[in-house]
Length: 155
Image (cartoon, rainbow, N blue to C red; front, side, top):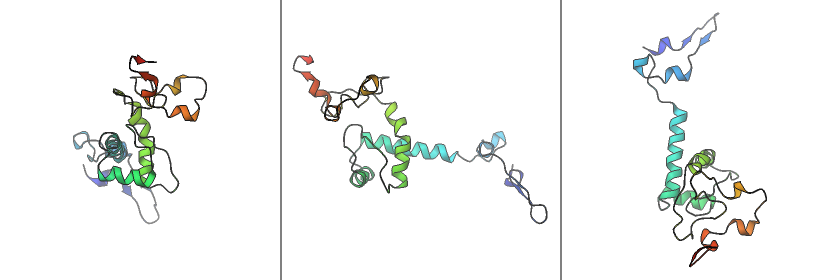
């Protein structure tokens, strides 16, 4: 199949444009498409990889640059938000960040890197803050999990 059968453009008195949907163009060639990748999904995948790197390898150059530029909290799972005059990369990360964080759960170990109220450290629970009906005082919201433990275990 060739490009002419996908897009027909008429010039002159007959000014018609017949375009085919991206879904049709991105089908494999075996299924009568052009075999092009879905750019939107590919872009999301790259941002998800960058988000994963922000969590698991904060020493890479890109992540250090983003940390310096946007001054986000360097925790086990950074809290990202829109910033004025942010780059396209940062805006893309903010858009997909809920996909990254909603699929995470981890072992809190000693609790020094885990925010008790804000982080998703229990599987299938977004955060404790999302489960309670009242607002948490901003000072307590940033407490780490170790603040609620003692040598004998949980307080």
